[in-house]
Image 1 (spheres, rainbow, N blue to C red):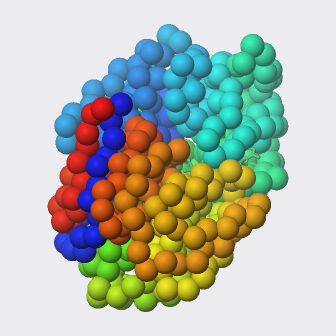
Image 2 (cartoon, rainbow, N blue to C red; image 1 turned 120 degrees about the horizontal axis):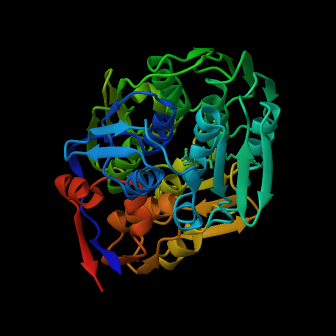
Length: 419
Ligand code: UD1
């Protein structure tokens, strides 16, 4: 199994390019199932989750050609299978995103229930409820969600909880439904808007993009389009934190700083000098120790849960005491005991962690437990004195393109080792 070997204590400096967004490309690839004609998707990051999605779609009969420059050509005109099998869904929960489009275009879908995952139970009840509201017959049997409908019918849906993939699934179902649908309390994450813009480019009629109320006028068919995926705001934020935690200066290019406001605000509170333009952002920590920053995760535009582990690492070395409250997922503190192994002082009570910063973390063998926890551990290792070995880095490969190359470019001492 591969591991990262990191020798910490180097001040990171330089510039890196943001890749395409993992959370935007996955629903957009699922949306290609809705197109009657070929489609081109650009700025596709080279990630394990993208490979899993490509495999999932290929097994359904979709023809995909993925070139090395991040362009995927997709032809969904000949679908022969309408199932997302357990073997793939268990490695990537986002496989649930094929449910809405398959049902909308072909009137049938079977998707394995994702089951539990490292960061909590993560139910899909709201996806199912919403599809039933759109007129689908949905049964859960033998570990599968089996759905069918002659043609979906527009409906008024109020989501009880803000759900990102839930909103995306219902949006992809509603675009081909008969009549008007309204999705209230919709997720406002930029990746939902990116999907909506892609659907509009395919011929969908959607109003309220970017707001919590999406109004969709169903159309009879959608065509392929040429679409470039949004940049990854979480990857961008992670590299900015690499500057903040090592006292360095990092510029991220080809990104959209306007989608990261809550994160940039926290970096300023931590003492960083933040500068940005339309498509770049830079954090300069001027070799100072960061100040502790308390935060509470919540749906966009508030502070993203996907940046919580990275700020936990920052607070572990910061000056002061910070309180971190996780309101989205009930079990997203699995990086805390690993940070403690590196010398961090953390007390966890329920969904709140109180972190008292220590001037120096020390390298240790640690275990990555999920994608963003891995990012937090890498940041801690970059700041720590000595050698850290991070196990189970396959989590990292799900969502960060060429992380060791990008960190090396910034001066980090990181190697991928097989053992
Ligand atoms: C997406 C992101 C993930 C991010 C998360 C929250 C993708 C592929 N993944 O995950 O990176 O951390 O949003 O921003 O885009 N819930 C229900 N019932 C449902 C659906 C969700 O109760 O049917 C709850 C969840 O348990 C959780 C909350 O809603 O407490 C938000 O989850 P959700 O937004 O659905 O997360 P994902 O879409 O899985």
